[in-house]
Length: 314
Image (cartoon, rainbow, N blue to C red; front, top):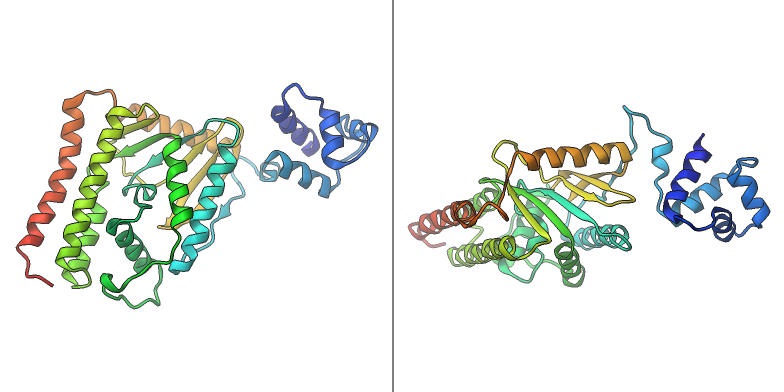
């Protein structure tokens, strides 16, 4: 049964190519030996099955699961700034492997501003990493933001940002998406770990980022933004791919449970599509609705700018 299912998955991958030729070449066996396996007169060894699964990027998990039980992967924990390099590199590998030969669509349920946008050489990006590290590393003593210097992971981070921007992207936002970073700025300002002049620059860069997203909503046909007022958003990321989708569920800011089970991914896509039906498209709803949505975020930012301007300087 498992061999039949593995062969079926391989047939999907190779289209009109000869199955026997493919198996013979990959396993370095004769045509007759390959035919015995494809006709199921002989069984694949464990090593052969793994070799084929790796070559065709087929998850063997699906052969060990049921409707009520699936196997998942977990990303490596990020507990210090040095771990970010491997986190960004692993994310980049996901994009490179999934989008290599087919167009992929990324669905993002944006409880917070998607972290892909803050992978740049700005004070805003450095502040986000500062916050993440303080929240993730329980042993780390908070130092003033001005003393925080993240490691140089610029090449991987920039490439990851570029890959995200190249995809078909569907994001779900609401009024609260921008709130978390504003709360973080206020918290670190009030605890005197963030100076007023630093907060002012970060807020200006945040406004620039929101303007960029607003313009992208108007001008980039590959980018779809929806306002969802009914659901609590979750930072879930779903990579929809014709051959092998991937569902990433956050366990913390930089930790994800990864699921590539076909049935679960199909259900996840249906769930995202259902949310979209109950959301407002900011690409097609017209200038008025789009302006109202983005003005709410600008007003939140301006409100914090005004609040900090009346506070004593730190």
